Length: 380
Image 1 (tube, rainbow, N blue to C red):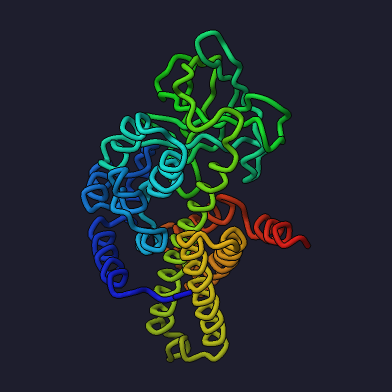
Image 2 (image 1 turned 180 degrees about the horizontal axis):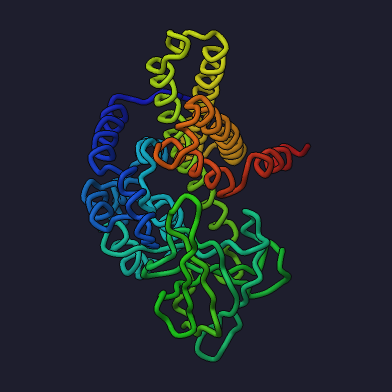
């Protein structure tokens, strides 16, 4: 398995970095936060992302995409993560888009996936609940059969990228108990449908998320995505893909925080010398470098395993997310600490990296969750 970028991917990485830097995401995050703009990102930047073709990278040419793999997507998410770009690429494109590409019929793909790829509309997956803890089989939202289709009742939170998304993909229980593997069905629900209430969530990382309530929302039978009672496999596959993409984003975030820290160590003087000359700080920086490189290998291994459909793909996904969660937490905390007093102020941007780290660590399961999942898959 190749754990380095090929020539095309190196070119993509350079282009992606240059584009993300040109959009000044850190300045935008600060501005959006201070304005209390709950959309949390820039619509014009989202459209430019679509024009670059990034929203179509992971989808087949038959679906209107570019036919690239998750290993290419990770190159983009790493670039987005380096400067904390707030656009909902992972939740709307990788997560919700994967559900559509895996399970939607031709008519649904034309209606919902094609506009997503074009950047003219956004789709969000409403699968998480208050007690689900990254377990897509824990579903309490109910979908009862009616003569014309289904009636959906319950709450989903957090719905990543869900505020002002045009379409929601909702997992609901059509049979069985709250934690049963069978009995889960996916539905396409317009965000403005009668009975849908979308409330924006204020998060420490300022990114777009929502709480969505369904109060007897009626949908036709044609709104079912995939098969009735059989959505869990699709959900798990889509979440795994999004988890790898997120691990790639976390890799970018820790890499940039590390670069900022090394630069600061080389420039800051104390007792008449650069603090980077202190051996204790050199040892700490060396440890961070090793953790980042281990994460890079784990993320690339997971991405290529998913692309190649290897039997150990799910294990490698958990390895990548556990490694990324631990490493980013360490790097972000060390970055703030080694920046000294200025690192603790809102004036300095390094604090945004720590806030992003805290949220990313828990998204799609933290390190403890993925270690437990790895052990379960291995039969420990």
